[in-house]
Amino acid sequence: MIVSDWWLATLFLYILGIAFALDAIWQGRTAQGTIAWIVALIFVPMVGIPLYLLFGSRRFHGYRLARRRGDARLNALGHQIRHSLMPFASRANTITQPLYNFFRLPMTHGNQCQLLINGEQTFAAMEHAIQQASHSICVQFYIVRDDASGQRLADALIEKAQQGVQVYFLYDEIGSHGLKNSFLTTMADAGIRISRFNALQLRHRLQINFRNHRKLMLIDGEQCFIGGINLGDEYLYQNNHWRDTHLQIRGPSALTFQLSFIEDWYWATQYLPRLKWQPLPANDLVNSDLTSNESNGETNNSAVMCINTGPADSQESASLFFSHLIHQAKNRVWIATPYFVPDIATLSALRLAALKGLDVRVILPDNTDKWLVQQAMGSYVEELSPCGVQFYSYQPGFMHQKVLLIDQHWSSIGSANLDNRSLRINFEANALICDEKFATQVETMLKQDLEQSLPMAVDSSRIKRLLTKTARLSAPIL
Image (cartoon, rainbow, N blue to C red):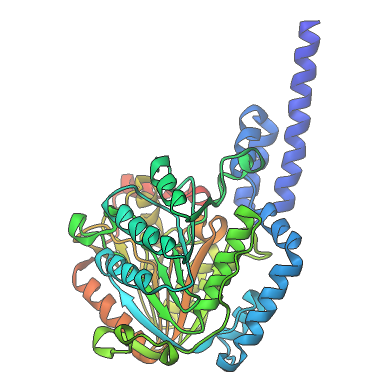
């Protein structure tokens, strides 16, 4: 009887493995990844099934369902925002039209953009903006630390909440593991509304592979902070020479990023906050402390588009975004990223750009915080270098910025890395900026990084090449 039960259990396990293998075929994006899952699910189901439940899905179905359940309000809100932004909408072109067709949010002019090139500048600008808030503050981070930087920002938020300002605080529970409950409780007791994005609860337990990697702060629907900096002391340059880039935007484009936050907040809480949705150009935002001053790195009339990508999208939106911009380049593609494990589309776009004779440069950290990623990156450097792509390793410390510079007008700053997790699995947010003056500032910033970098040489030893090629096999999970 025991033997019979064991055989029935084994048969059921293998049937279940076949069922999940069919699901892998249905959802599969790449042949390599799909074949790997099929082999594991059919031949080793006792291992493959748990792994597939945790890491196999490429679709965040619950997020899309939350959107549908909120149809009347979310759709009406999106329509309202698109309509209100029409006076600020920039003329569509070959770069923006495909992006608008997918993301359904226009590129708007009348924005003021300021580069923030380290944690010190970013946190100071955020705290200053918080002090000016009169209606609402929306905060979203992947990583939140209960340290001096985290506490200082929390204190500023608590002060505004006690003044009657609506404050919403959204964080990713996986990225912020180890965050003390006392840190959150203190803010909640002051009236701040707090939520985890994808809480480790029963209804979300099989989606822990998905992370909300966005770093956003919205002030009154008029200002937006976006980039690569999370909330913690580790992002301060003075501590460990951490190199990162953030962006402060003032103007109508802030509303598009606020909508991105609202969609995430609704997914996590099933609640839609009542926020300000009236767009204003940067020049009309009355605050003498923040009037445009180009000597401080601010530009007055930048065109900005919100690029919010993620696994709930019907297409691989992040990969499409990067490969599209690279294909549109006429003379220059400069990239700064901490993790360079591109997918086939992005890899092909870079190869073709270099073969066309474009100036293609990629700045990487000398050492990443992930050993396996570091080894896999070497394989891509080896493959693209002969095509003319120039690679540089940043020397002073860890470089975490995610910056793209295209020709003389286009730049992108945000949270997305050039790896499989950002291109396919994570929720990311980037700002696409069209502004020659701002692009010149980004160029100057990257030139300063290049001055502190060394050209990367390909290690031709057989052992090293074997190591990098072996590590590259894990690219789909990096």
